[in-house]
Image (cartoon, rainbow, N blue to C red; front, side, top):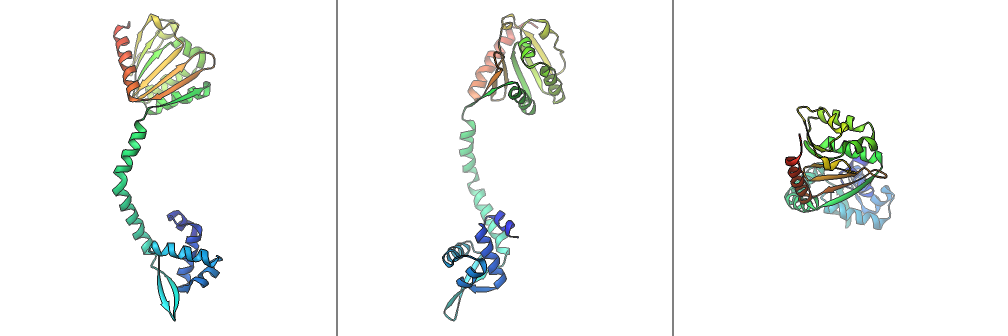
Length: 237
């Protein structure tokens, strides 16, 4: 019961004092402090706080101030009121959050395990994907994973356009309903793979220790889409 009141929003001491008030019916601050194992000054501060929350009321008996716990139903009423107040300011809070969310950001990843996690992230979130790079370099650096990527992508029904180098590795890629591949001779010596979807662009560098830069930016994604679409139109099928 104490923990549930803490989960509701009261501190440990506030919850303890409120339960003490419920159990005693009515009592002085001195008595409540004793029963709650608190200093009297601390008990007074907490009682003032509970009073401001509408959880207790005050009555004077024989010139002594007594504190009485209100019906626990007031907790539910208070929670509903707080929910209503929060709903009023939620649009403003969302506007502030959206400004932060739309702000461009970049992250750097290093190592094979980190790159595989990036690919899993792409597979979990993308609906359509554009890829530019060298299939041969990808196979050399991350081994078997490109085939796993392909199988999971098809399972998730993610459509892909791939611009690849002209090589035996790239030409061996199986085309299907979700896969389109075109070839550019100039990509043969490329040491970078670029993955584009929505407002995200992943630059994966297949050189030295494999690394990647994840850029979240609508403008950057738009520019990369323009470049990709232009190259796609010039590429061989």
